[in-house]
Length: 412
Image (cartoon, rainbow, N blue to C red):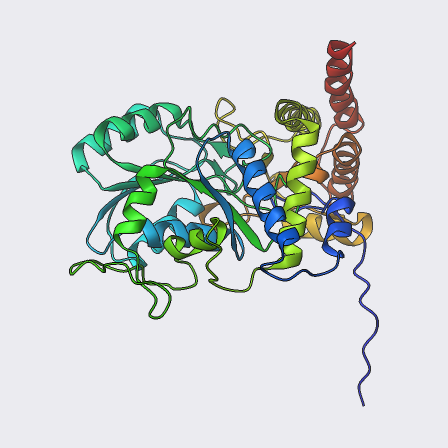
């Protein structure tokens, strides 16, 4: 009979755009005893999680809670709830995850129109606003931080325009929440979906989101009444949300004081999310954003000092992801394999037209540290030299140290 060994994953320094290393305090929280779904101690944890999510999303929205499932479950829940079949939806695309929003919207029965720009840049907000005025969509779905290209899309002007024109704006902030400012209320964003496995350093398995009264109104128009649970009037003409599990109009009943059961909550993941949020808020959002920015700048400085070229626009660079052009004549996958097997470091390749052209290195959450930045720079330099690449040996770590020293001097 075949026997299996104890689970013993190898230690890794994970420098991808996600998932990243999990904070040990989060892992400890996941080992806490299970509570019943209606235990007052558990519902108190739910309330605390909602309070902390409001702070994280920088919003006063009543509805700020997680959907059980990976980040995509949150995106699907938001779009399934806010897109009725036949709605026109505008999706500005500047990387792989814009295409994902298109696919989800099409599955919701939307009439999808797209606006595309070359990968490696973002849209001038006026381009998107002009498209909104031209197309008159019911909803705009857009990515805030595009990890496939390492770019960050400005949203403030787009949010204001959507509010003025009566258009719902749904934002994918999976890559940015907890590491880059996401100012939901000030930017007038109607629904925002985050992720746990990136800047929050919580395992993948929950999708925190928030939405305002404008979004809630549409959800409630589509609410299906469960037989035997409610007696309120059912509209004679409505298009119910197509998924029961991802129906935000029912999920919010469980997260409300009514505590109407929808499905069994992912208890250990809720513990993990609550602890990850507590850690983030204890650090302070502004300090956390500054840490991510500094580590991203140090990594970029080191890469360029090594003689490598960063891919994409520097003016709209996503602070938590560096995209690097693979030098001519270098086997990019051989370098990644060597980093993983000889140094215990994982970095990422890319997708679509950028597959084989760039590496992607993330500086997110618990993985976003001076130690990790210096480690990956030294290891990448060694792996490139070993694979026959030409680099300016010894300069990368020194350039990063200059950035770290500058920040240290500013704090003194």
